[in-house]
Image (cartoon, rainbow, N blue to C red; front, side):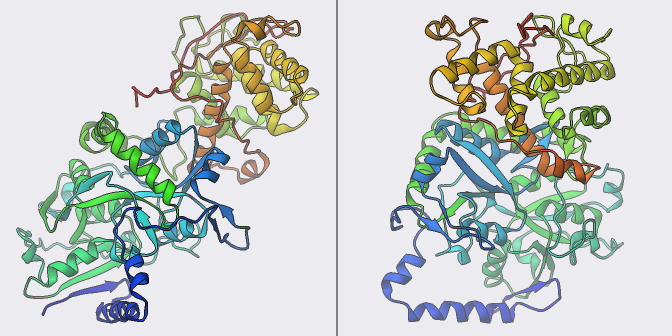
Length: 588
């Protein structure tokens, strides 16, 4: 019977791999029937034993972390491991995006949770970190593989996708004129120095061949062919199954590379064939016109999220949410946005603002780098605030008259010496000058730099007078007026007559949700930027604190009204600006 020869990058065949696999399978005979049934359980939660207060081993000596659903709710945080690639999770024009990221964010919002993302590129590393208790869920276009049985449990399918052959229908020169795509964050082999190519990666593949390979018309045509896959690709099992039905071997090479990178290598002629998820391959085919995306070589596979097998309540909660949301428009709309809308995909991958190792957030990065040191801020933090204010649009103007990248009100602009708020340099210089004034105003009041940053941002949004009112309410009611979480609670209360008429309140009514949400969104976005946007001065990374935001108070679904206060001695707000909207349940 023919078999599929799988070659790791070192060229060894997979006969040894198959023998090892069979040996591993034979160990199952030593287990009791109950153990075998448990390890081979279907990918749902019906047979997973509940482990109250699941505590998993920490990594590198770190203490164990409770990871059951109750502890997730108690922490208000869902920690997800995700890959940085062209569909799962990425940053485009300053905003975190992605099919699975958007869905996870929606799930977290529906359950009053903060979503925290840890980026890992290697599939085995993802599952190892999940099992060690470093995260709650893994999202990476995961197709369940046989070796996952007994290690993790998978949710209901997010979608089904067939495995397809990706091959060239035209010469590599047809792709030579395309701009270099930046749709993925380059992975680096463990132990390699920064900037070195991975051993065995597509970037070190042989030069393009001038001989055009015969097109694969049907799966059986793969006999005798060399197919390159990412390491640990679930489609190696698809090829093993296919090899049992055809005459001749299929030679499989596994490389430490992403599926996108291998598809590009096929286009450039350094790889002959790869197998990929059909929807991803079609997107790449819209970009690389010399690719042929066919034939389909097997049944459609489910793509799902992975959780630990003993996290039954989390798995049940995710499954119920997926089933419920699939009855509505969320899943269909999100899938169309990232997998069907090829024009939007082409616009993203062709853009210099699809952030990766290049470190480009906007056309104004140089201004951010120039002026952020005046605040002692990481330039990416100021960039996150700029995005929140204007989406990096220098001509942005609010209904209340705030203008420019940092949305300066006319009175504020005049007081900080800005003549033309639409001029990017003047606007950033003036905005930073106003932020410095706020920083000075809060220095003695709030001595902790991490906490003070939140007070400064809230004051930029709503006026320091309202923030001081919330401080006085916090002190009156036994809370800490120097802790943002406590003050944020009372800032929210300033929209209620019972509280904005309190004798300690000097500046009256305030839509407190707006500054509280403003602070949370800026700090959350900054956390994303810190992972992917490279700073030219590593010391800034070490010097700038990474403040935690009050995500609990930042209610997703509310309209965010960014209110620009003019500079005044008492902190009184002189003007209002509406510039951004947080996506609501009906807008995702």
